[in-house]
Amino acid sequence: MFRRLQFESLQQGLAVFALFASFTLFLYFIYRMLRMKKERAEHLANLPLEEVEDNPDLSQNEKGNTKK
Image (tube, rainbow, N blue to C red):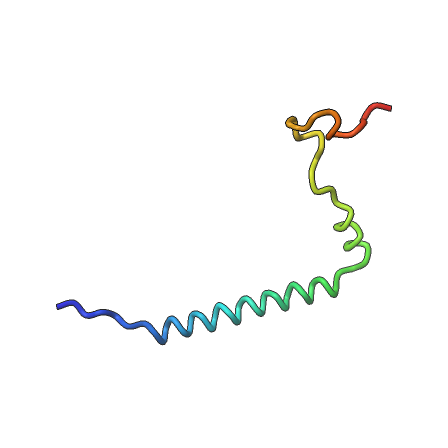
């Protein structure tokens, strides 16, 4: 009565396409990283990962000594 649809070739094609797209994206990011200017890399390396003032859960000892 009902036939089961077979999409094996489509599934294989999509898997190959996903692998190719991921590899291409990986190569693009490697290219961008290698072409990045030194000043930009240093700026990104020195960005803070977390704002201390915005986290009310931290105690005064965890925030650091802000008083001078």
